[in-house]
Amino acid sequence: MLPPEHIKWFSTQSDSTLSSTEIRKERHAVRYLHIGVEFDATVFFLERFIGESLAKNLDKLQRPMVEEIRENTDKIFGVDEDEWKTLNVYNSMQDIILPTMSRVFF
Image (cartoon, rainbow, N blue to C red; front, top):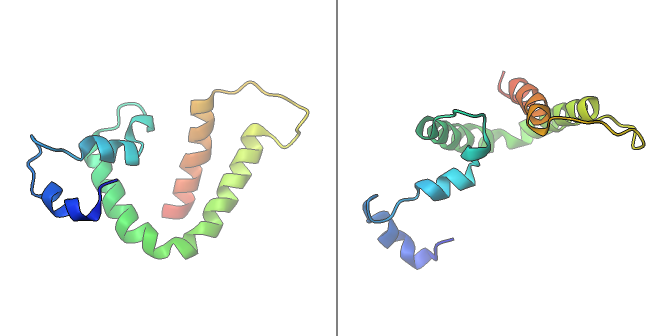
């Protein structure tokens, strides 16, 4: 977090002096995305799409997202609290997130 009085100064610094790249990588969790995701294109997409489209329509998207997440989570992890499963967490999250994105975006 940068105090408001330092934002103007920060924005005038060159990337070789101060760069927001690492902060943006962490904020968007780029390192946790699918292996091999290219940073610049991903951040451009996230900032542009989320900032301009999703944020403005969140009230319309929230219900379908929650429904899709709940349905896929129950399907993958199960609803029986007494039955344990061995799962690959990365694959399981992909199986939850990708259908949710598809439902919301398309």
